[in-house]
Image 1 (cartoon, helix red, strand yellow):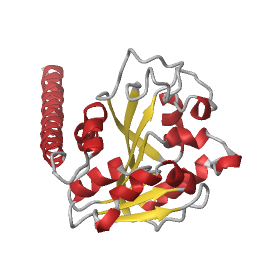
Image 2: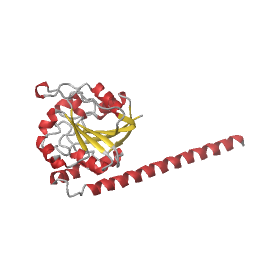
Image 3: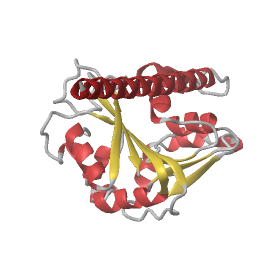
Image 4: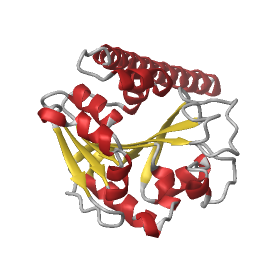
Length: 263
């Protein structure tokens, strides 16, 4: 009899735990859906450029940023922000109470000069602070950011082009800097082009892709916890042997979406 009671008691605990987990999952899903809807509505802002609007369909920024947990009032670092496509969306999403630091180095500034000039012209995006810092010279304030985004750029940790202003990045030092700059509980949000499983690190410089397993290993070794993967940008038809800038795959690459958290 005592054993039977124990079995029923254990079953009740399991059922209660399962219900609690289901309830949490449902609550989180509802919250993500609401934020995605809010970001999607913001994407229709008349101030956004036509070029940015055309990118939305394949980048799905509403789904990606809601999955990452972006919300109003956050302070966000957009690392290697390039022309600022994501910086603008994040800035509009965090609102007047939030702030975005859009980082680039000189190589990125040269590559996206025209887009950057038009994006920040006439003081638009007043809640965006532009930061220029070279590889291995990033000096960030500690425990400042609610989120750090690295969108389609983490693979460049393995890119080297000294002649054109891209010295080898000390990846471990960079991740340590980002870990310290995030508030406890802050999110490191990464989107990148997928390379073949087992692809060498050098693929980051040759194909501008990265094996998701290598990316995950790097980030977790730096003290971050992998919280979730998103599949909204996966493309099983991508030819992983082609560089991401090849005309046949550009804009259609298989992309991994990771949400890591600083504990």
